[in-house]
Image 1: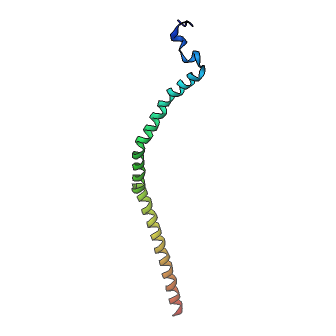
Image 2: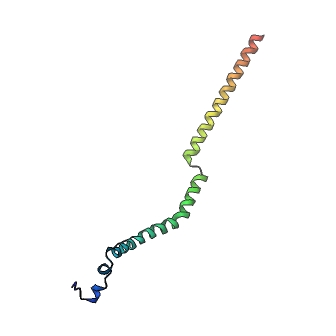
Image 3: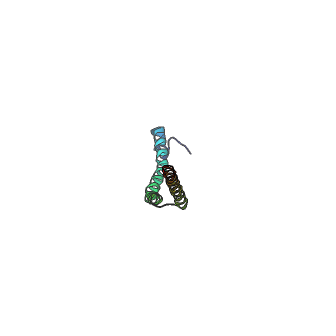
Length: 97
């Protein structure tokens, strides 16, 4: 079947040009995978960007709870500080009488 006198096999690229053609064919066969992956990234980019924006612009329930707890702790600290200050002022007023 692989008769060197046969014009079909004589015209085969690996018979004339060596492994360069085989490597080119392998590279070209791998290219569609890269192209598909690139197209998939380009096609899903707007969706990923929208999801990222939504995540940044909205607050989850756990984030809201954490912020509320922090706000409440700070308020309690301010009230405790004001109460201590008022108690000291009252003590000074009682001493000065």
